[in-house]
Amino acid sequence: DTGVSQDPRHKITKRGQNVTFRCDPISEHNRLYWYRQTLGQGPEFLTYFQNEAQLEKSRLLSDRFSAERPKGSFSTLEIQRTEQGDSAMYLCASSLRTGEDTQYFGPGTRLTVL
Amino acid sequence: KQEVTQIPAALSVPEGENLVLNCSFTDSAIYNLQWFRQDPGKGLTSLLLIQSSQREQTSGRLNASLDKSSGRSTLYIAASQPGDSATYLCAGGLAGSGNTGKLIFGQGTTLQVKP
Image 1: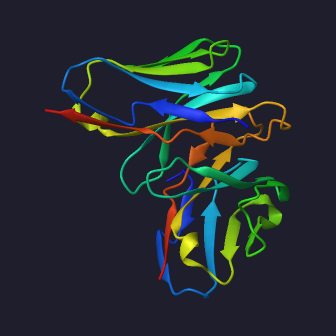
Image 2: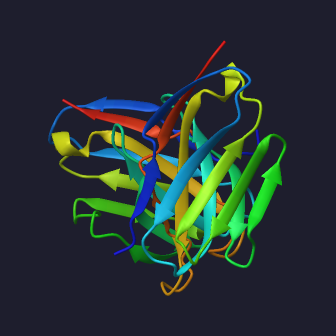
C-alpha cells in the first residue's frame, strides 16, 4: 500500500494520560499536514511540515500538543495530559511539493478520552 | 475569516438520479478547491481538485465547477448509485497564507442513495 498510513487506528485513554500518534506519508511527499475532526464537523487544520520544518501551527494546537517530523519522513503528534475535549479523529495528509498539490489523507486515528 | 458552507447538510435520492452538491466560501482569495469523500469512520478520499485558474474538473460520473467571483463550487454526480452514499466535503486552499496548503473545510453533505 503506497498511501498515507496512520497508527494506531483507535486509541482509548484516560484523562490525564499522554498519547502519541504516528503518520507515514506517501513516499517522496515533502508536505505533511495534521487535521482534527470532531463528530459531524469538517476537519480543522492543526499544523503542517515542509520536509522536517514545522512551518505553521493553528491556535487549536495548545501547548499540550507537539508535533515532529524528524528527517522529513514520518511524523508524530503527541498530546500530553489528555482532556475529554481532545476526543476526535486525528487525520494526517501529505502532498507532493507545494500548497497547490492534492492532499492525500490517511485513515485517521480515533482518540477517545474517558 | 474564511468560511466554507455546504448545502444541504443531508440528501437522500433514489438510485439513478443526477444530483448537485453545493459549496460556498466567503473569501474569493482561494487558490484551489478540493472535493473529498468520507465513508463513516474513515479518512478522506480526494475526488477532484480545481485550481483557481480552472473552472471545472471531471472524473468519471463526477464533475466539479468553481466560480470564484460568486464564491461557489458545485459537485455534480451523474446517475447516482448506492455506492455513492457517503459524506462529501469541500475544502478551499487559502491564498495569502504563503500557499501553506492549509485547507478550510465545510461541514459536509451526507448523501444517501437508495436502491
